Image (cartoon, rainbow, N blue to C red; front, side, top):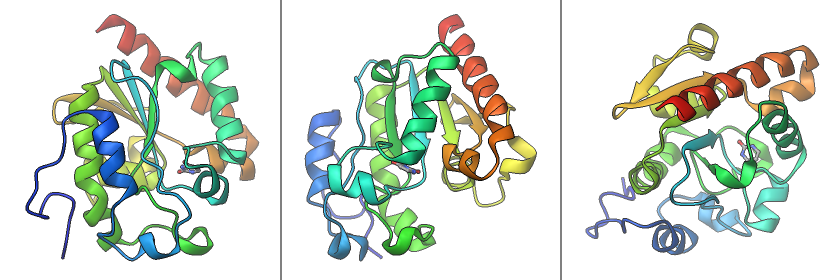
Length: 194
Ligand code: URA
């Protein structure tokens, strides 16, 4: 299977060039139905990287991560946690919208994974926040479980990873919001202390 790593060309080491490669990517079938690929956004010197699942309808239209309903919740939670969105780098496990908002398939995640790894290599954040089960598995392995790991520090390539709820989960269970904010605050404190 084609992956971002195995196309014969190494990936660029800076975010703008990576974004160009991602926008042109045809490594999996998701490219055929996308409007825009969504590489992610934020400064290269961000202390915190937030990793979601995949772009939804709004993100596919706009080419920006977390700009729909889940994005509103994420922004609210970031404010409560004392984090400025524009100081974080926000991206997803897969950069193109899966049709009907289904979960990304393992082959799609495998194809896209090197882009995430390259983005993390470019930013070298102090902490990563994994938003939801898909990001948790992508970063911590197929056996990783959000239920078991939520709020507990793990690591990806020596970078601390904090698994927490996906903001969309709060749309179905508002009581999780408090825990999402607590986890984001915990991640901020670790980023500030590092
Ligand atoms: N959900 C995600 O996981 N990522 C986005 O960018 C938007 C919604």
